[in-house]
Image (cartoon, rainbow, N blue to C red; front, side, top):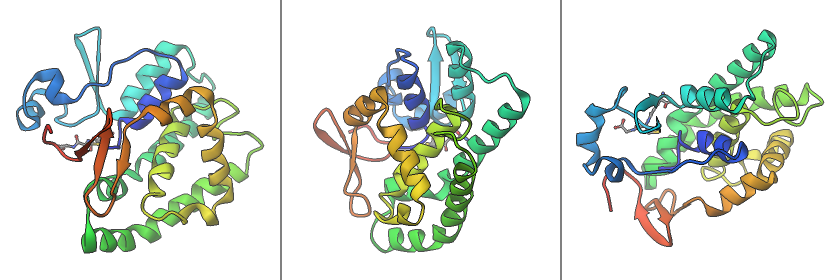
Length: 217
Ligand SMILES: N[C@@H](CCC(=O)N[C@@H](CS)C(=O)NCC(=O)O)C(=O)O
């Protein structure tokens, strides 16, 4: 699925950190149902460092990446603000991400309708914060974990409704600013495309469409 591994990958691409993205069934050579009980919190994403350290939870993964890159914030106020944006952005995960990646037909339409008020409310909050600053991104002119998390969910929401960001010009500008960063543009061009959302969602990996889900195909 295109979900919580996106922001860590955007961050690593921005920071020019080399990594391999490996499906769990390829890394462990086992079905997901057999892998799940083996990993620390039974869910992905997980980053494996030096082949021995297993870090789960997307926010923890991003904190780790920022720590090793030396781009960590030091001002406690800014750290607090960045964390509040990061957590608020990650709260958009459910039900947005599973709906886009898996729901089809009437179920997709119902979920879209049900989530719209809370989605729009959170978008309003994020729009307001960006409008209150003269900076390009949420904290300053440097994109950080909180920016990439917000970017992921906002970008994904366009697959729920292609016009959803029309009422949020500052968020649309933010998406544009993140997408135009050279390393991010390259990543977005090469990442698997998510197609047939709401019909029969698939990720196109190396030119081959694979149904989303937890089965190796
Ligand atoms: N709080 C966790 C949530 C992780 C999560 O929900 N992972 C989903 C995919 S994005 C998962 O592993 N689903 C498969 C399963 O639960 O078996 C995080 O931020 O990483």
